[in-house]
Image (tube, rainbow, N blue to C red):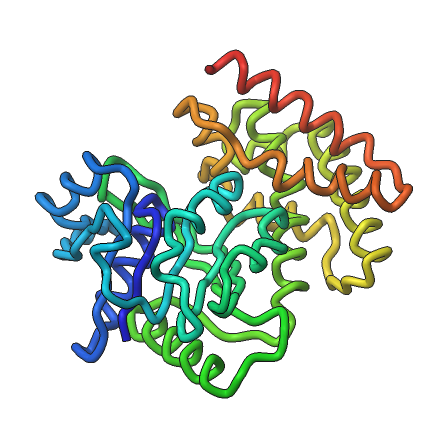
Length: 308
């Protein structure tokens, strides 16, 4: 089985290291990167993995052009949500009926992008693993979490077996990963957490845990999440979650910088449109109100402009 990971950032690098640690020699792992200079640097120095003071280095081949890959059984898509469509066009030579395309984006804006993968089979994933990129090919594994992968639509037996093999490879590499028949609910559950944390860490320029010390931020968090819950209810998406669960995530990840705050500090575009923005968009389409999510989107975009 050939596993190709598109986008060697924090999550892509973590998956590269994990699948390499779990490889018994029967599979091959490659990274695909549109950034030629970064690809060359990782090829030169290896993929460096750091966790709890332990350092490992993996010689994973990083490829610049999809046409240089003869076949991909698994295609992990680890790019930002706003780059998914462009990335799928870039990866089009690899999309065939026996390829599983695993979408690993934040938010929910990517959930209808399976229309861009031709005969390939869509798998969706969500993870609470904490990883940070300390430079090209240098991955810091900050926190262990859970990873769920699943199909939105009933798969063929062959696709189901291949996904099980992917899960086994991730587990062998030390990741707490499993398949789920309710991936949509899992993705929405994580959406509620991102809706409540990410934008507020940007607006307050703080680590996750600091939100616990800001009463106004907690009120905003609650309203934003409850607006998202109303949207989910109308769409008949059942998520067993409460806004206080997000407070618990803040406590558990108190020293973490949200991915959105990391993007702002690195002067990169955020995924606000795929998270709070998508809640606001869906609410409007359903005749609902989501004023807090609209406000959080506006504030984050104003901050983005200041950092640009």
